[in-house]
Length: 141
Image (cartoon, rainbow, N blue to C red; front, side, top):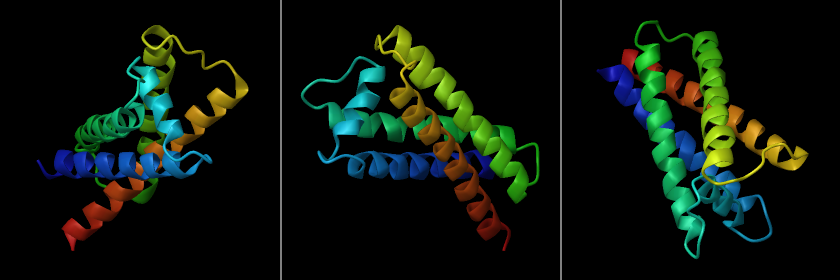
């Protein structure tokens, strides 16, 4: 029970960090959050707020799944990082590629879109792994 709660918390925190990175990444604060909302065809006048909420929700979902998968293993740094990178890759494959292509009608084949979504997804997964590992160390102590 502890692992899925730790995974859920790790995913929400990782989603918040990615949202913060998306806010400060352009000259217009929050403009990149519209891209997250457009994956689900929800970008409108309040696209930044919807994008923020979607990142927190998706972070929670993928963190929860991370915690369930990690439940079978002891938390070591290499294992959580590899599993975190795998989670980030699966996140990229499902959300920006599949959902963004079929629901939001976006193409991830352009170089800029591919790099920004792929790299941030891997950072997202790495953050889930690091935060999970730190929380599991604190729980063990």
